[in-house]
Image 1: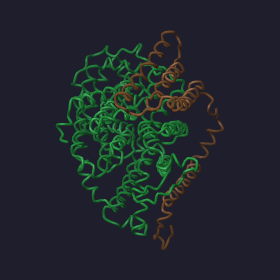
Image 2 (image 1 turned 180 degrees about the horizontal axis):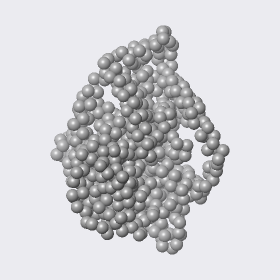
Image 3 (image 1 turned 90 degrees about the vertical axis):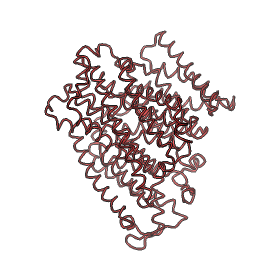
Image 4 (image 1 turned 120 degrees about the vertical axis):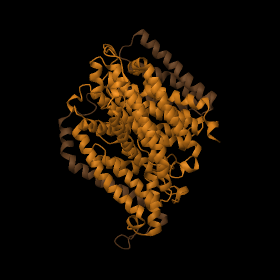
Length: 496
Length: 141
């Protein structure tokens, strides 16, 4: 199928619908881009790969962008990645500059998204070409690299590693996959669950449970607080918005978008790290650091361009190495799995049309996001007051639909959703990190195959250090990433 | 798995399914102990200070969500068996579930709010059931 035949009106409609729904999800505190993608994934079931991706990528871009609305208007980050937007966005609202802050955020978001999209288009194929040469040893080291990076950037290094390893452990439940060279024997499965867990826990019910049900349980625990609403908030009573506010902010925009893209490329690192890092850098370089936190537009620009910079960046490792850059792109793996396609180094080469369609969908999603938000921001702002008692039951129902349909109607998957919803709630209570857990869960079975097969073939652990110059380079990168990540972590903690 | 030299390892294919899980379990155990050692005092202090869960949470909404969801999951296949391959198990159970959850989450239960919750409980499952089950032939409980 050629690209032109894929780029139908339906394709662009799905991008637009996805982006608008994503903005709504992002704009409602407690609902995230990850949740939007997880809940809407089953809808892609009958759409085909490219159309399904169009919807999901729209949700992703819209979800990340929508988070700025409550961050600026209510001082509540709609998504975790909007956390630093509150620092200057809300003081601007208090000063009657809410609409200006929103428009600054929207323009910064689209620029961040487009810069990261360019990075995705340039880097992902090059990285994939390079990764094709990898043997099982380098592939295992890449996963090890991913796990160390994400653990190092968690709020606690030890807890981050623990969460990632726990994810790997749970992913090993079930049979040692024959289709990938395993012996087909079951492990870690109680006898009474052997029938259900032969293939282990399905990925999507796990994700939907962790990001859908768990979020609702946390809200229920807090008494399902009603939206603060916009009563008393004057969105625009100050000066009208002018583009001149961006004068002198080009370097800030490029640097913050670059930071967002880079953090996105690092596997498992959330958007909050990107925006915190970009915000702190802008504050460090600013001639007026004392204005930050009091309604400085440069702070909103740094935060929003960085968190949208994440969108393209997080797709780089997914499409070139098969390693998701964040929890939302982890769910996108589900869309590929639904269509029987494996993401990894061969993906772009074997599916050039899908690759091009994804780039076009991302571009379109950024443009739709910009147009919808810039022209309809006053209406979108009202979304923050939509009652949760209407929305959350619908989301619960959609979680069930998603879990049930993923394997053509398996009720155990619905129970899996509940099990991992409760686990996600518990993890939140005791401070486990969900992003490393998810990445560990997704990469665990591959890590096992690469590790065990390497040892079966070479018979020594030293092969992981001596196989090739790429292996040595990966060890150097692992060491560097840990060093860099610890530095970032310290800066982040300092900021907090 | 047997060890021939310091770094040498030979793996028996028949037992190869236990190699990686064993290593991961050991690492997990070590990490758990490390967390206890480094954060034990903080954790003990937190436990000692209380109040313990579930004190201070909204019992009705939290446990109501869990209980309602369990009942919903149990009821769907049971009702679905009465109308096989129609998705009606999902449809018929979703209506009371949505209504129940909406009412549970409401803070003010006036006539208007209940009417909106009722309409939502009828319209949302009807739309989802019609689109997925009837239009796209996607199987539902």
